[in-house]
Length: 330
Image 1 (spheres, rainbow, N blue to C red):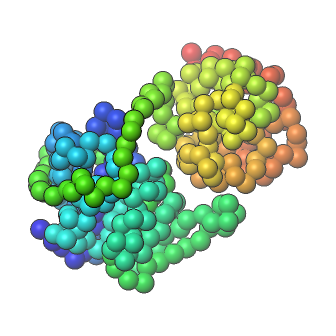
Image 2 (cartoon, rainbow, N blue to C red; image 1 turned 45 degrees about the horizontal axis):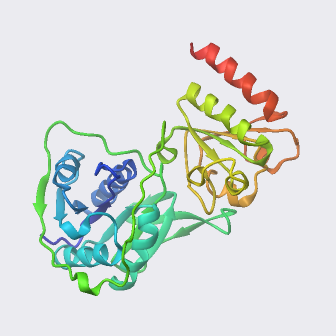
Image 3 (cartoon, rainbow, N blue to C red; image 1 turned 180 degrees about the vertical axis):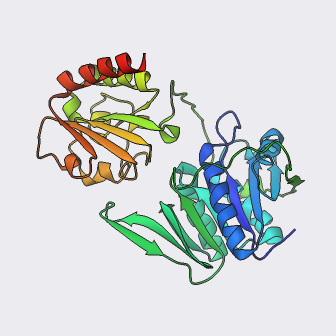
């Protein structure tokens, strides 16, 4: 089952055991790398009762799907997931491991890198290929600089930011093989215990998956301003985001936060309403393809990176913008 030039994708599942879109983007990147090296692409799915997800992943063009289905893996628990992964590693030993840049990978990838003595690049936003040489681009210094990294040795691990690659398309024929892998997990070795797991279900478009994001900052004025943004988002079939101050003030839920300490998004269109453009926020959205800024301060930093800018108060611009778009899209 092993392959020196295999590229392994660690597939992340949602609360309903569905494949997360970011994992399908990692599958695209894995296929690109495997073609360069003449290797294989392998997807790894771990969890409890996840055989259906493995069969679904087999429809996305990878060569093999490894399935670790174990009752102890019902929900992410770092020590158990790392142990299961390392047991798979001993049989597979791929050249590279790709993961989506998520809350799980932020915790798991460094643990794997330490255990495997592997190189690690997190939050990658681009993959550069020069014949057989591969390098990875990631933002550093609060996203003020883009750094390019290459690995000096193998194995190596990379986590990819959303929208770095297109999602792998679903194929109707030529499904790959699902290979069950048995693992032994020692529950007594666990150093942490999950006391409670609370699941919050967002209504509407998910922030990480949205092609359009409408975000508000302190300049939105308060909770009423975010109600206006929600209405605008409905017109555009968009997700709602926020900079950190509104989340700290309770105007918006914490899961809406975009920035260095929040979600990192790269939609086709990012609308920033009442956001000044602090480096911490820009770090989470500067990869957006088009940025529209609405701010009453013509010297606001956000205008430096915006493709389009509107100088005016959010109270005036956002409702007018919504009405105009509703008329156009009617």
